[in-house]
Image 1 (tube, rainbow, N blue to C red):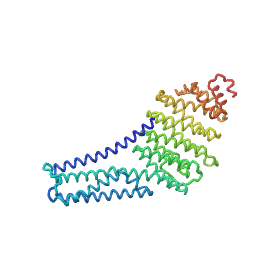
Image 2 (cartoon, rainbow, N blue to C red):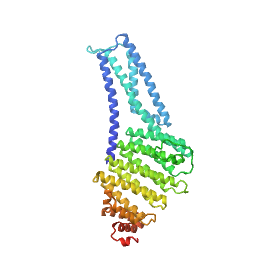
Image 3 (tube, helix red, strand yellow):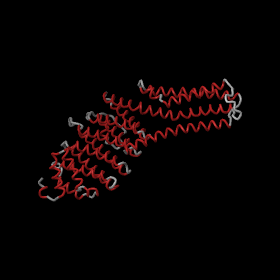
Image 4 (cartoon, rainbow, N blue to C red):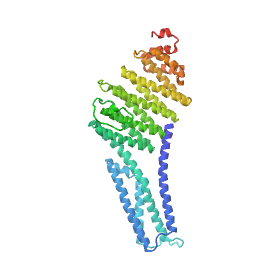
Length: 458
């Protein structure tokens, strides 16, 4: 329901902006008409020259504006493109231009007083009408060109860039792929600034699809390509072929996500987080030769850090609870897929997931424990589930780690032993991972310390 309300607000904002533009043009046209009638700017033969100039000027502008319209349709390279460009608003503006061009020409040929009203100055009224229409047409070009610009950016730009990225991937053109991805990211930032969530969502989906493809590609094809888009990122990755491109995608999603949180765009922020999650899951699930495996692990760890960052920022900004939940769910999904694998590299990812979930839980608890109660309780439940996964892992000193949990100085960890949270974790394990029921029970005993002698031998 809240999402629907947000969409309605965006629509109203866009419609309001359009209405304001049209009203501004109408008001200016009326002001010019009134001033022209009461303060005539031409008399006698000068009126004829002025009428002729108005007609010629509007004709020239008409040709220029609608040439741009046809050009925009051609850029789309579709048979139905012109139908999209020439909608009812375009037709209305064309009609206004036609009236503004033809009416002065008619008035050049006649001085007949159509109304024969003694209290109206026919010459001034005619000139006022002509200049009002001309003023409206000229000013209406501004919102019209803004609309054409939006069309060319989003209706044309998004599909075209998506196609070019796919072609670059298929053709193994890494530099082209990188450049087109960065163009798509710029388009995404522009869409966020314009509060265009539909267009931003389309861009995020295309970035996600590209990122998933890169997560499955080989990472051992080292090249000399360098990129200045990484900023703080590990320069070692900048020279690793498709690995470098994968980071271009992640950096772009990070920029769009951060800007979306700043602009309070719920839907876009969630789409970015799910895109990061899906890319992370694909990288976790990739099974191939060991070459490049450590690189993918670092990529996943980077994604985990971004999901935590978005969750923390959402909490600090008193953002929608769903955004915090999406961040946690993304981390949990990556963590679960990873927990079912068994190697040292996978353990690095799991530790990172657990650590970041704990940080989000602590921030939610400290910021507003009433508002974010469901979020920090879900976080603690996720941690119980992960502990069940690693209970028998020889690489972890579970007993010592359980003791550290009890001694944690984080306020939220005082809720870790809550029976309500534990029961939810038991239910989840029972439904989805029934083979881990005993591991969860054993860890509970170890955490409680009530059966320390037994738990030490479990």
